[in-house]
Length: 552
Image 1: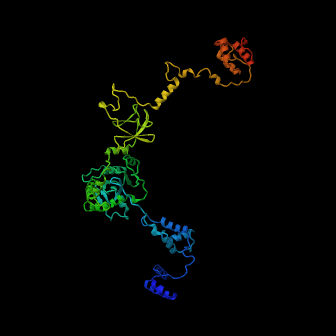
Image 2 (image 1 turned 90 degrees about the vertical axis):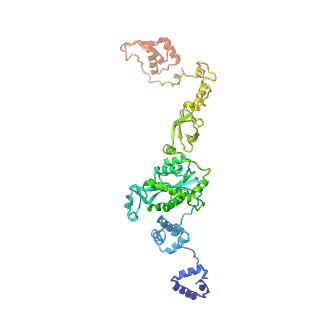
Image 3 (image 1 turned 30 degrees about the vertical axis):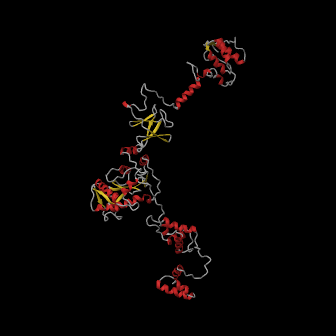
């Protein structure tokens, strides 16, 4: 068709060619001309000045593409037709109705990789590699969708009874079958264990990881040991604080995970698929009893699968690859009791004793090297299973390793000094140093017996009254000493001082000594009145005396 169009001399001839092919193919003239242009035919017409213009802006196209994306389904992709998206934007005032046809919008979206097909494309990813066996373990759990527990055995779900149209039947199942899967990323050795549970829980995950890492379940399945990294999904049971503490204390790192990223668990997902198609498909042929029987058969099949099946990536059996590449990288898992402690009691408090030791179980640990540790100070301790019997001591956010001191005959501490064979002194604490410095400042380098601190140079008595400001004079009034008790003949000298201060007389130290020397501890009422009047008038007080009647 393209060659005939090139040979046609005028528009009428070209129209005849297109008409013939339109009758032959049933396609429109525009489509036929477009197909011919793709195969080298050119119309020879001058391009329009507005060629390439779409009539819509980038923002308007983005609005249509966004509508396709936000209304899409996770598995099916975009389901909203472009015609509906354009209609919505027209009704909402984003694109004026009649500006551009839905077909033209769809073509532009395809050209710019913004259409439905482009939005369904998978996100690009990178390959992940591990360096050696037990470098990375991938862990995942899955509820079996075909099998459940019934009357103590494993039953198969009948698709006629358990389907999307009968959800209540599935809800009646109380005991679900949970399959836990762990894969060594390098060798792809698989470890599987079944549990009777509705879903993942800390109890299930703890038991599964302990079983996988401890190993020793079968003499022909050598897989065991702790990984350096553990990849797992962000399920609530997985990231619970106790579980993270246990994994951290084992020295295992958990790289950060991007949500909804199944490729990160690719090895485990692949292993789940292998196990479903190769092992669980056999369960229909041989009904299983209790979960313990199922796990026994699963272990038996694991031995064969890991030992015989050649893996396409490394070209060896999984067990052979693991055995070859785990050399120098095998870290044995601590006993289950240690894992339980790390899970349940990640940190405990201890008080430093007078000999700079703390206790943990039957062991003593010396903490002289811990910055800030001294007798009476509380420190935190952690039993890191992979370091036991070493202990991790935490103080002020810093961690220190402490070695067990050990024991002598008779149960004495190995750091103790045998009587008569030596002498040891503990380093001075900050408090001890402060006490020594204080004594040196108060008594000097060579203090004498019963020496006075600071050689008596401190002023501690006889100056306190001088610090009191002068008392202002009250309004002048007639002094009456005996008004309340006309029959009183003698007053304490302190009462005189009190009345003098009340009358505005400032009692100086010299006046105090003179009055006491002259009067003693008491004074008659008449003389006290005379002294008060004389001092209030600024006269000499000696010899002053006033006669008072009982009526006052």
